[in-house]
Image 1 (cartoon, rainbow, N blue to C red):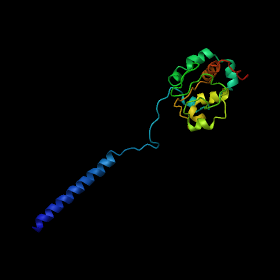
Image 2 (image 1 turned 135 degrees about the vertical axis):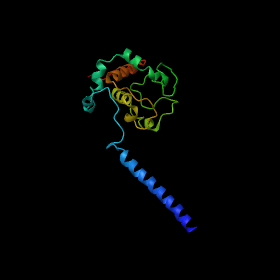
Image 3 (image 1 turned 30 degrees about the vertical axis):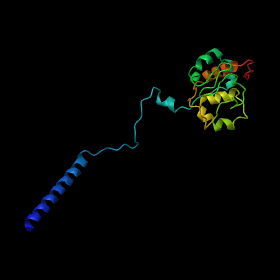
Image 4 (image 1 turned 60 degrees about the vertical axis):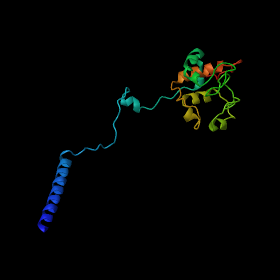
Length: 178
């Protein structure tokens, strides 16, 4: 009986040694190459040198407003109409109505539930520079805003929209001169 037990134990140990040896050999033959930096670069339409270059400084909004076109601004706000009304007497939607927004105090539309970030700025008015900054990137301009729109990247388009928003009033306000 003792010899049978030794044979079984020897067979089990031999099997384990063979499996471990095969595992070590497979690790040597099929060793994975770990990259120095995990992940990979996605192809880009822009050349690498252009992507590394610093962004050009934008002209001030007053200079861009001199060449702005309110008609182009009206076309540019097409996506905004899903959340905002632009006509006089328009009801609030997901966002407040934007009629007569230029020079209006921030967070001042009656009956609209503004975010705490917007309420904190209620002492300020929506002048050209503030509208330009908010339209560029709402979340960066006013952290905590509930506006989900990513923003308008093109400076000339933002100027067109500001010019259009200024026209949405019974008496449009004077825009800043360059």
